[in-house]
Image (cartoon, rainbow, N blue to C red; front, side, top):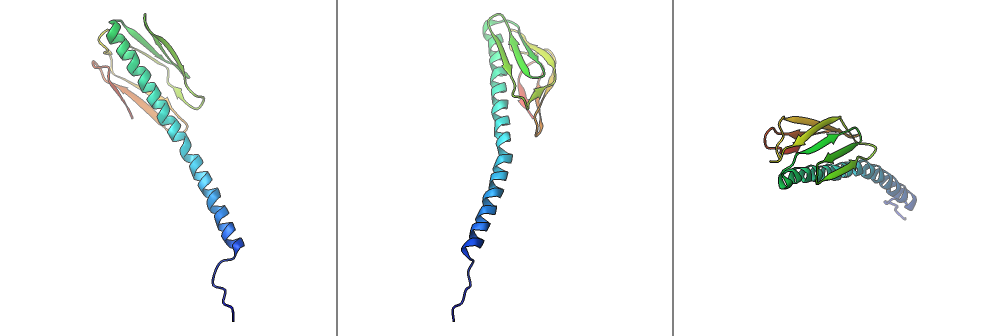
Length: 131
């Protein structure tokens, strides 16, 4: 007598199809967080560039955080950076003095679909970190 103890080909294909669909959905959920990390790194590089510009040229560098863009302005350096449509800043202005310092501690929020990032600027040093 023939004994069938395995799965049929149709059952195996159905299980593989379900696994593929579930993996596609989970991969799609993780892609935006990588884009947010890249955006935070780009913004950090721009802020560091503005601070270095203030220190090298010994001039005041103004930074304006607007809803969808970051605008950096000084005599030797002007840069306008537009955020993607799913990110936005709260409006705020600050400046680096000729030593790369700021005169007031600040916390600036960047809103994403998944979470809110905070750029926390420390008084005097002009350094910052992202929460």
